[in-house]
Amino acid sequence: MKTVKEGERFGRLTVTGYKATERWSNGKLKYVYYCKCDCGETVEVDVYNLLSGRSTSCGCYVREIKKIRRDKEMLGKRFGKLTVIEPVETEKKSNGKDYIVRYRCKCDCGNTCIVRYSQLVGGLTKSCGCLHHEIPAEKYAVNKDSVNSRLYWIHAGILDRTKNNPVYIPRGIAAEWALPNGVGYKNFKEWSYKNGYYEQPKETPRKDKLTIDRWPDPEGPYSPDNCRWVTMKEQSNNRWTNSKIRINNKIYNYAQAAEVFGLGEHFINHRVMGGWSNSAIAYAIEHQDLSVHRKNREYYDKCGFRVLIPRTNEDFPTAKGTGSNKTKLKGTDVVV
Image 1 (cartoon, rainbow, N blue to C red):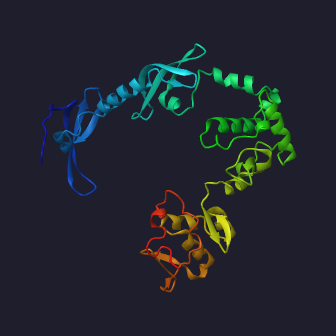
Image 2: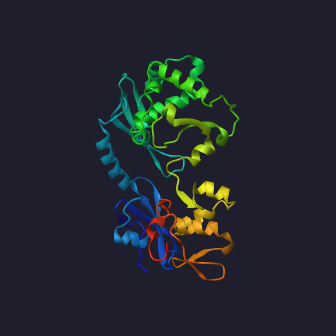
Image 3: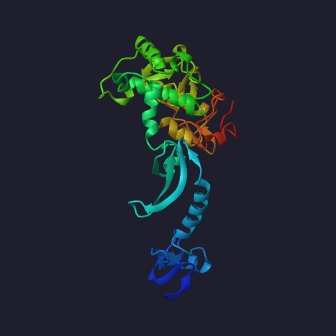
């Protein structure tokens, strides 16, 4: 056993006592010591990390290096109407572990304010607060009743997305809905009430609330000929990001397929995460009586006989992020 003496220093750490002998997850022993950092924090460190030089502080040294680099990058940088002037001393969060990084900023209107780093880089704070009052005054010159309506803020959200969101900028918005001084909102409001929108009680469940849906082209613009009012559930089924599957020559997204064929909530998702191709999932749904299962990239029925899966979904990629794309069309994952 390698030991260290009380009072011995390792970087910023000073050994104050021996805690206990514990075991790593692999079963090997580890010898843990109490150490006090120059910053005042007390930490528990394994003796091998001390002797090898892997642990030289409680973590404050790494934070200081990161802070120096971050402050150098942030000074003078603009975020909306704010310009970063200087860093403000960091504070610990209530959990006692993480830190709040803040900066003093000057707004174009002349005011100064202190803003969190995460809110600046995340685009959540773009001014001292003056921008919040300017937008309705300049762009949405409508009466108070309209500003307090849900329809008004839906229209404002569309304008914001098509102006600032890189995904929506190419898709755009109809010219008559983007006119300034409240004219665009007035046109949008008239179209909405003629095409299925109506005021709903505040207690309406979220899935039943009306939302604007781009249809028939989900990747097209926000325009009178490409929009409709539907419930949240209907719009979720129309998202262009939905993974699709062809069953009995009809196309469904995963949620629709589970609902139409009376499947369990996780029937499809578990198979996608298990590396099944869409063709195999479709075959299992069409032939539920066979209880198709997968083993070593091959498919078998409930009697143990190998099942040959026809290619019916090769034009639909499997869901992203599940790892199933890696096995698509390899080996016997999809066979004819």
